[in-house]
Length: 112
Length: 112
Image (cartoon, rainbow over all chains, first blue to last red; front, side, top):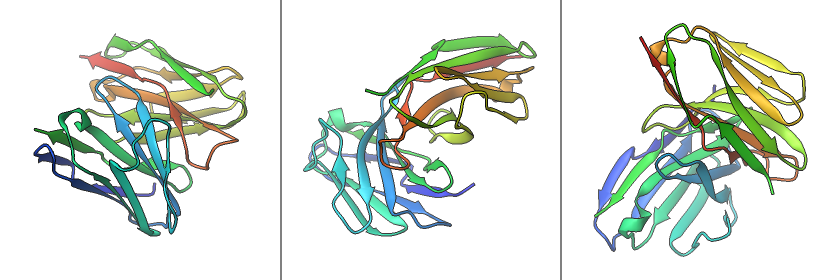
């Protein structure tokens, strides 16, 4: 299957700082990528749809100024959590559509 | 609104004890139903896609089936390495290609 690589796998940051998470499609081009958030024992909740060369589309209730998404190329989308707070601590996962939707390995964000 | 409900939430099986996981869904127009496996701290790993009622897919000890209202993931003679959370997701014809709606998953534990 197609490979989607996410980096970093885990990150710890101080409250008030910003964190950038990268999502790359390694062996295919992805005009659209998706960013999900997952709390323990909960489902994956879509945060936003990332479109190459245009603005991301955010789901209802997701703060676009807090979760900045940039999809500057056909193989890279980034999610920046700005002014992170402890309640932003979660597991963030990206996906890209090839034949099916393939997922990155996820990023565990802990804000202290 | 699209909804995906999985049952049971958790399932403990002895090695070799076959069982089934259920995924019921409500969607305006089904583009596809997907099964993923998720290990702790990892992103979802693609297993199957089903597109129409009556369709079946098999992979090793796993078999997925689809009706107009639900899907089953049958596990035959499971092994401890099959322990994981199994996620069901649907794609709606009216949604962006690749956008998925997930259930909460079934946490499967297989003990020796």
